[in-house]
Image 1 (cartoon, rainbow, N blue to C red):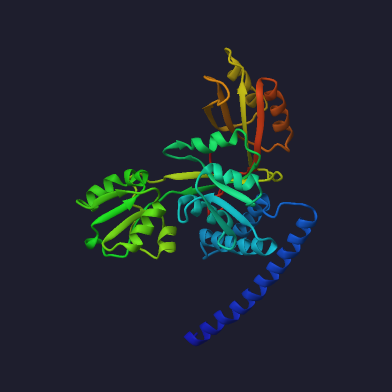
Image 2 (tube, one colour):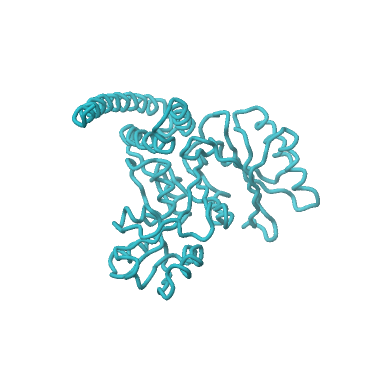
Length: 362
């Protein structure tokens, strides 16, 4: 077949694709109207997970699973934006990893609101100035995010989804590598790339900044300078990726929570997050945790944080498999409450999926 004929085939396929995409969007708009009339949330994580799993199963290739997921993420983002003008708050400024995690979850068609702190993200959602918020909860290398754990204690919102976002650093600049004389970044990022910088950029001045995004902003206006930041920062600040994956330890990921006004229904592969406190006496925590074993619930995370109401007492955060709509979970929570001085269910939500569609294992 000639090149012209192959291009004509592509044109014909594109014509059909555009027509089908618009049909899909029109149907999504009708669904949005029904959800609004019923008072339902516009964003439904369990339905999103079903759609992604279904299209992955339908895909025979050669289109990679990861690429298919990204395509559908943008299709669903465009649909959401047309159903309702969604606002999503995140820990800013723009081009942070929190921003990247929010974009991976909601796509590029919704409106994003950069906040100065985790507490401000919670407030935006609680006051309904934003429909959803995205906050970090734990990092695979550095552990829990204390500001998020502390704010969850008295939060007036629910966890409705989670997402796992890879933390991969790039060296960004508008100069060639041999001309770079200064590298900007957040102290944490500089530390995570310390060995690479020593080996690959000896003698280059390292300058700490308030965020990796600020570093990218400075690199964009200063000659012979660079930044350690994300690929998203390269896109936003129009910088070249001089080197990628420069972190000393690979496999670094951060788990983010999506905050909303309510949790969704069960998918059959969910997690539930709770926070509770127990009496300050021997065996109290053991008795509380026994509720999970008694009803066959697998805990995937437990953290403790000092109670801000009384010295030397603690709140316990637990994630476990299951959904509050399922009988074993409901029974376990009832049993757990009998051992607690207080118990709050933070939300039930689908377990995070990687772009391939595979669930993240605990």
